[in-house]
Image (cartoon, rainbow over all chains, first blue to last red; front, side, top):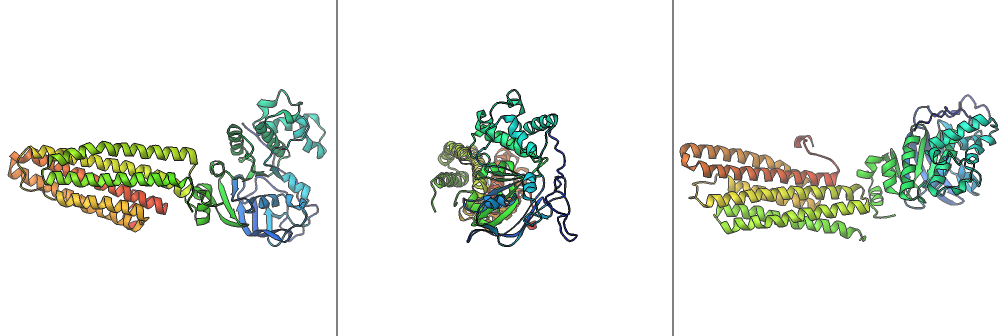
Amino acid sequence: MSVDFATPTVSLVKTEPSPNSSATGPIQATAPVPMIEVENLDFFYGKSQALHGVSLKIPARQVTAFIGPSGCGKSTLLRCFNRMNDLIEGTRIGRGHIKIQGIDIYDPSVDVIALRRQVGMVFQKSNPFPKSIYQNISYGLELQGVKDKARLDAVVEKSLRGAALWDEVKDRLHTSALGLSGGQQQRLCIARAIAVEPAVILMDEPCSALDPIATSKVEELIQELKKQFTIVIVTHSMQQAGRCSDKTAFFYLGKLIEMDVTQKVFTKPAQQQTEDYITGRFG
Amino acid sequence: MSLYWEQHLQEIREQLLLMSSLVERNLGQSAKALMERDDVLADLVEDEDSEIDELEKRIDELVITYISTHGPMARDCRFLITASKISSELERIADQATTVARRARDLNKHPALKSLSNIPVMAEEVKEMLRQSIKAFVDRDTDLALEVIGRDKLVDSEYKETARDVESAIMSDPETTGRELHLLTVAKALERAGDHATNIAEEVFYLYKGQDIRHVKLSSL
């Protein structure tokens, strides 16, 4: 499978940044590491603090897995990366920053729509639009004003190939996406996410509703996608994190306990809490 | 906290300890069969070897089943791999004990040699190395594991000394050649058993420290 997405050129900022601002240009998928940098982040749901002073760096074009027991803050942090939490009333960043390619994504100058185009998301439960397979992919581009049929056709094919789905659906592109199996629907959602050529793909337990075969296909797809995209995946499956991630971060009670190379975390973690969690002794 | 699956790990631990106690006993009895010219004891060592072989297979089966069904991580994974390796080392020590027992039986058919050279000392030393390496496993004592590794040099030098004694004995009385060569085989078997005990100690160190010290000089640790 070969996918060659153009370097993203969408600017995240609404206006020209000031000379002192680090927000000096568009997100570039080819820019140096780290892709995402979190600095001393506190996050609140109302009065309840969900994240406590989290600092980490997510390298570009690698898969980073977030693990930890339910309520540890891993999905909260993931949703901070494309400001999905903004949609929840009462949420706020206390202190700290999140920078993507050096741009503070909570800076008032940031265009949130552009951010979400650059930081795509795949959810736990596949959520295709009640439209055709083709329209599920083309819809995002059409919203951006793309009307050229040839270009839309090309993007649909490239995205479906990129999501390892093309061969299975090429003869029924105009049938309802809801007729696909669960695994196919999830790969369609991945195709939809990559159609707009993001720099980062966030995956929130993308395989938790899938059978082992469909899970294997998605994991294989992740290995292909990381050649072009930075991937952050939240998973409750230790085996999945071990199999398909390069780095693993363990969270507990809203704190980052440990982040390291996956192989090290799963064979010789530095922190006792990490070891106890991954061996099933708590959580 | 006791978890339902920890009993499976405990079962593997118990089988390993049972195996090590049988191997230690066989090693001691094989040396005793040689020193006391006791054929009955030598036969017993050989008979019990099959029980040790079965335990090795049982432990491997338990380890494979646990890995397949539980997807172990970190220290659990290290424990399982180590348990399988230790059982393999124990089985090889038992094989060396069988070799000693067989040679003892061969020697018992002939008049006793004047001297068994360093064999009694070597046998005691190797048995102690085995005992200490298993104690290190049970007590999670990596210092003791290192101590066992250090003792292997002593066994090696005792083997070399025995080889020189055998050579001298053959030169002074060529008629003892056959018997002396049996003795040399016994010394070699004990030296190899010492190597296996050292390997167990290295596995114990890896289990608790997560550091692979095989083929590493002790002085560099």
